Structure formats: C-alpha cells, structure tokens
Length: 401
Ligand code: AMP
Ligand code: MG
Image (tube, rainbow, N blue to C red):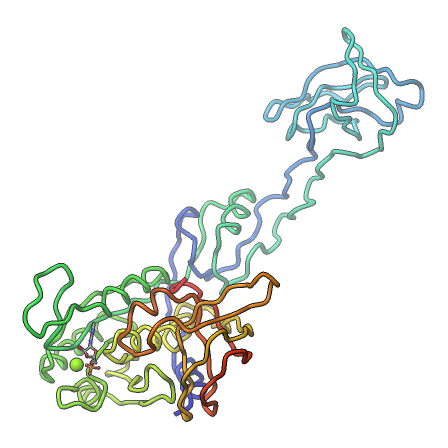
C-alpha cells in the first residue's frame, strides 16, 4: 500500500479521546485545550510607564520647560492624586500613570534641581506610556480549543490572570515488544540475545508526546501469551503499540493474534524501512504493529504513528516541513517504495542546503539514525541518485530532534 494512503487511512480511523481535566498552568505545556483560554483582564491592566522618568501633562511644557515635582509613582505603589497643572510625578517602569498625566519623559532628558525639573526639547505627547488593553482585551481568546499549549501561551495566560486550563485527557498508550530473543537493557546478554531497544525508545518518545505510557514489557513469540497480553491491554489503553512479529517469519505471531481478536486494517507499506508495518484493531482498540528491526520500528513510528497519536490527543496532525537540498554523495535506491534514508544536512559556505546519507542504510543500523538530523525522502518511482541531485529532506522534529 502506498504510504500516503496508509497515512490517510490511519488518521481517518483514529478519533480524539474523550474526557477532560483541569491542569495547573505550570503543568500545561504540551497539553491540548478542551476549552478556549480567555483573558480575565486587560493587558496591561492599567496605563503604565515604559520608562524610568517623569509623568507630566504635555501641554504644561508650552508655558516653559520647568515643572514642580509633586510625588512618586512606583510599580505596586501608585501616586493616587491627579497631577496638578505645572507639576510632574517621578515614575518608574511599570508604575501606573497618575490621573491627569498624559506623557512620560525619560529621566535621561531631565535635569533635577531641588523640587523642580527641567525638561529638554522634543517631548511628544503620549510617549512612553503602555496603554491599558493594548496587548490583550478582557474576554478575548488567547488560545483556541484544540490547540497545544506552549511556554509562550503559559506566560500569556499567567499575565492575563489564568491559573489553570481545561485540557483534553492524555490518552493511555500501551507498549510492548515481542520476541524470544529480547532482553532488558542493563542485564547480562545471553547467547543469541538482543537488547530490547524498541520499547525503551518508544516509551521515551511517547513521554515527550504528552501521552500516558503503559509499559507492558517483553512478550515471547507465543500466540497464547500475546493474545492474553492484548486482551489485558485493551481494558486499560486507548491504543496499543507493539514491535516485532509482524513480518512473514515462522515466529511472527502478532498479526495472526490480532486477526483472531479483531482485524488487520492495513499491512505492508511501500516504504523503506518499515514494509511489515501493520495497523488493526483488537476488540475496539486500535493497534499499531511496528516491525521489529529497530530503525524500521522508529521510522514507522515517526511517519505513521505520530500523526495518528496527534489526532488521538485532539490535535490536527501537521505536515512535516519539507525542504530541498543538494546531494553531496550518490545514493542507492530501488524503485517501488518510498525511501526514508537517514541523512545529515547543513548549509554550505554559499548558504545552500546540502545533504548526505549517514552510514549504511540497513533497517538495523541504529548508529546512522542516531547521527542523522533529517530524512532524505526518495519517491517510490525514483532510482539511484547521483551527487548534485536536488532531493527532498524533512528535518527531524520532536521526538526525533
Ligand atoms: P521481527 O520483526 O520480530 O522479525 O524482528 C526483526 C529483527 O528485529 C530481528 O533481528 C529482531 O531480533 C529485531 N528486534 C525485534 N524486536 C526488537 C526490539 N524490541 N528491540 C531490538 N531489536 C528487535
Ligand atoms: Mg521476532
């Protein structure tokens, strides 16, 4: 199946989770709003000074350049009285403009002598005042429902008087690996053993995506145990991610178990790496069956699962940024599948984008993925590429960057 079709089908068959919860603002980064964020106050909340200086009535300067000091306005301790004609108030950055004043003169333009100040030329009416509501108005929408909260939104919300947000519930994502050879990293490796790198990488990537991760460990290549584990997982998780056992080997049971408990909706994608990727349902729970090969597992996760999980979280999946770069060394490419070769791109001295594949491109070569900063995306019908060709690249984004 072409990857574009797989991508579309996957996103179409995933729906945002239901349920919402109130989240303190400091914990809101990355969460998706279930209700719009509305400003509780005007920002600024009152006219205030942008400078340390003197608040004056501009028209008083037409009668002379000297004014009488009448008091002080500090941030948090305003001068409450109206400014009388011929008077000025010493004012600090952020302090409220006293009633009657319409202009702030920077202190650098003022000479002080006793209780009088002398002001230079060129003072414009209204200058250095931050106006009430010029940034945000009470009740205005700071961020719409369905949008993801960033650090800047948190600053904006806090400034506008918001202490917490209502977020869409974090989906629960169950993850397990399948394979008799798999062992927990950090333990002593036995003969023929392979460390389970997929699960720890997936758990880590998922944590960065603001979902709740249910780490279900390693399963042997045993249909009964896989079946029991899936039956258990569907009672707890919104979606399940497995790796391994979806290919055509004699120990590949994941697909057959999914078919017994639900259905396989798509299998075998025209992409490299990642051809054996499967998607289906166990009972009513969507399941992503990633290939076991470590690079294939992570590439299919990034290309196919991440957009589906964004939709599950309540977001609209966004297209990856696609750029063009000049190949600095030739590439091997077989016609028939889209290649996601692991590349490293940079600007040369002429500021042009250049890219080269990193290392071998086998679906087990993790060091290449670790050194890469982009995919070189070679279309299905393209063949070998020569140095100098312009190729499409997609720079890594979170959780790869
Ligand atoms: P499979 O898809 O189960 O046929 O596995 C393909 C290859 O990926 C085999 O070499 C497996 O040992 C390896 N593999 C499978 N699962 C994992 C995993 N969780 N971590 C690392 N390698 C794996
Ligand atoms: Mg296996």
